[in-house]
Image (tube, rainbow, N blue to C red):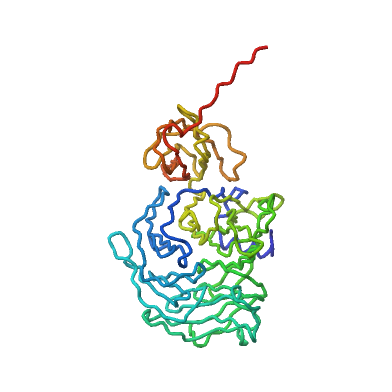
Length: 499
């Protein structure tokens, strides 16, 4: 949906100057599952999050911190896995933040700080720096030596107001990480923030604190955390924020996300209003809503959101059904669903997914059941393996197929079963019309014989190579094989029909 058309056109030029030379009128192709790393611990044990640190990605789930090494092929490579025995947090909705090599967590156990600077292959496990009791928050944001902490209005048992149900953003000086000191606060009981209602979420952009509430959102100068003052305010209520830390911030609600261009002076201008694709409501009796977490990709050219089906009894997410990705570099033409600037990708696994984090050409998520999943974007190479079960395989040899696309022409597709190559596939046929992509999506096919595959879970991996020699894994599919004699279906011969 387009809003503020004149402003939007002006700001698009600032955000994505290369768009002036673009000749496409369709968004990137859908996100496709590239790899999955099974869960290492129970999801319900503690806060969770995904953070990039140089060439590594940290994924916190339960009491386990898994460190992944980034690679061009796309397969998840576990560099190390550490059980954090000293972790006291046990809240799945606890506050988590990462900054300058340190992990910050808050829950019923208090505020905990861990040093992750030495967590790498051949390095050391996470080191507990400090634990401060009686500091219970569910939203954390860090900028330099200032930590902002909030217990959101959305989690309070009362309706927020400026008298009996007040929310506050506490500001801590973390110059000494071993002893954080609260030095200031922004309360909805004061004139500084009374007109914002109850605070729901916080973030930092260009060093300014951004806070969204039930009546509006605002930016604050907290360079002196003991005396914060307000810079800008707008009457746009929201339940969550999405921020890239610099020039983009989005105010999200259940059915929309309004993206603003954030300036170095702490002021902001509305740019895009995005809503959920109506195609996701077809055939559903339950309501759907934007997941309360989203991210901008690292180049600032896309907004990656997720869509949840809502449990009508608890009004909480019951399962994550899809990614809804919005492309800033595509003209906001309407008249289709999904719209031309939008890519809808159905997720795999009947679960709620959390922490969508863009890292290079991938999006990482933490699934409550599946563990860490890596999803690929089509600016590199993207595609799918169209096989769900071994019942689709014929005995004595069968075809496995899928589709692939990329910015450059795809020269080769190689299929792997676990670490062993099954050979190269053939690329043929006309472009697929069922794949939403600005580049042609072609079908790949390969004949294999997997009748004697050992019983157990195995992973099919598809790796593509484009005409420039770039090689990348673009799809991954876990398949359970019952064992030799049961790994295929014996097709009955069709009887000849005589007339």
